[in-house]
Length: 95
Image (cartoon, rainbow, N blue to C red; front, side):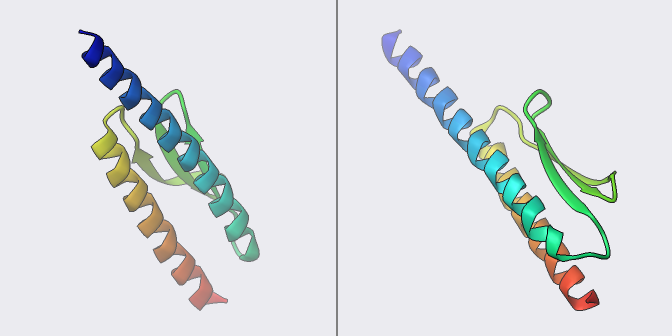
């Protein structure tokens, strides 16, 4: 029983660490996109719903679901990162 409690605690701690890293990543992405003046891009992570939203000029253009599952969380991190890379490339070719 104690071992299971420790596993659950480690799992919760890993999720919290990943969530903090995602919040920092979203803040950095928002800052990085400020170099493009043609459109405002903002990336926010909502702890309550565990989603990351990509906004363009105030409207959500993409939502990424970060659930309580570490595997899904990792996949969402990769998907968000890849999407922002493609968006960055698209914007860089427009300028």
